[in-house]
Image (cartoon, rainbow, N blue to C red; front, side):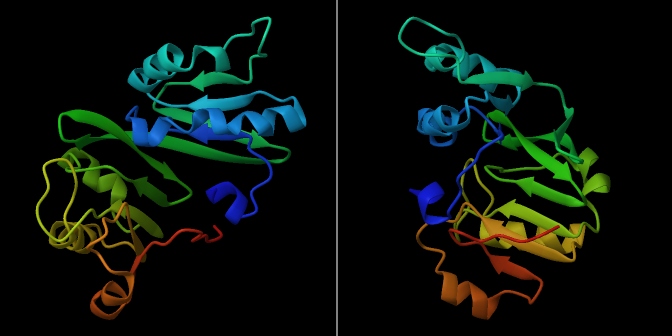
Amino acid sequence: QQLINNNIKKIDSIIYTHEHADQTAGIFEFRPFFFQTKKKISIYCNKQTKSRLLKSYSWLFKSSTLYPKIMEIKNTSSRFTIKKNNSKINFKSLDVLHGSVKTRGYLFNNIAYISDCKEIPKKNYSILKKLNVLIIDCFRFNKHITHLDLNTTIELIQNLNPKKAILTNMHVDLDYEYLKKKLPKNIIPAYDGLNFTF
């Protein structure tokens, strides 16, 4: 539904942060994109996610008499490059903590995307300082065992000092209009369909 609503008609690659079902369970919905172009969709993820995808959705990654292979795990390393025509984007992943699970944040073009996160190891702070855009987990007002809360997220943003920060992964208690009024001008709450150029 999100793909339809946002008029996304072509998918070249998918980048996963981790293997949890709310991240991966919709993977079969990408089959129509393969049927349209007959080009395999490249997957970038960590090793845990690769293992889960191959175990749970094996028919997407190998051909059979009923279904063609429509995807391939392209890369599980911490650095990779996605190319298209004359353009390319270099990605660097960093491990962040999501409860007891290590998930990935991604750095590219002076932007960081870090969802599903409770803690960022301090050794990664130096590469996250003064970004153009920091997209960061902010689950709810109160403390949570596997996610950042609003106050902690704001403190983290102030410490890392990006030009702009976007709060993502918000629970129902974080009202968009309330946040717009209360947040500093360089911090905005995300919404479905949000996009920006870089």
